[in-house]
Length: 414
Image (cartoon, rainbow, N blue to C red; front, side, top):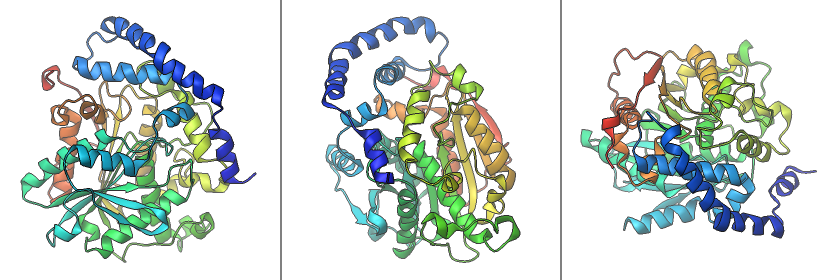
């Protein structure tokens, strides 16, 4: 069975299941939501988030408990491009996109290359969604707010959001090829590698590290530490950064490092099953669809729990600084920390890891989703401080490799 046939079989949704999905949304979901809401004062006692945030998380948990990933995909019709166009219309801004190689598109937020200054900065953003679901409008709200803050330093900053093929259409290495094509396109329109920061959340953060690993392996392939790795065999484009140049930074928010369908063994999966907004079953299903038909030998290139740590040797020659954030209440917490500490930070001395107290998967985006100001969240402020220092080539001081970040009740207002 081909990779495409395997994915289609996994994604097939019968009319019966479609009817059950709609029935759940209309009849069961409201009751499930109200039941969770009724229990929340007890369960969330001491949880320093405003009610609008709590309600957003409860809503997502009710969806988590009642629908599988194929049903979520059925309900979230459209794609990243249509979500971007809807967002642009709601904000009364002109949508701007660049078509790039391998079928990808760059969707611009803020100033594009044509109306930016010579030394302009750009954040190349890869959205999350398990490679199966499209970008959501609240992600664009988040980055639009970020641009306004970053431009206060009198630097022109744009966000280039990559509309990559979802796993219903394509799987590895298509998304990686599109991400590499996006970097190549940014270089062609005038951005310097030192003015480019990669950023992603969840699956998008996985893609960030796919890019970094690939660029690193290309530089290592002639050395003994990578002599057994033939990058060309994976079908990935052989795009390389210009010699002796490196990207300015890489930001991974709740990176989906364990892309596999095996039963999770990490302690955080048991601890946080009820508190996170995603389920272990959904993570396994996302992985099963994304990896359908992919040879086992290719999986260490995207399942970072299986990647030999030696493949990260020399990573500091590919990217200048790295920031990884993870929520205390995430299912993925322990896997993220294991890869971040034991592989990434092992070979990149300027890696910062932030553990957010009470944080769930992709936590920073849900303030915007709930209609709250993202700037009232400490983690967002830390991310923006890091981005500002990185983009302006400033110093970050002596940050420890692992920060524990606590939310302040007073930092939010309903």
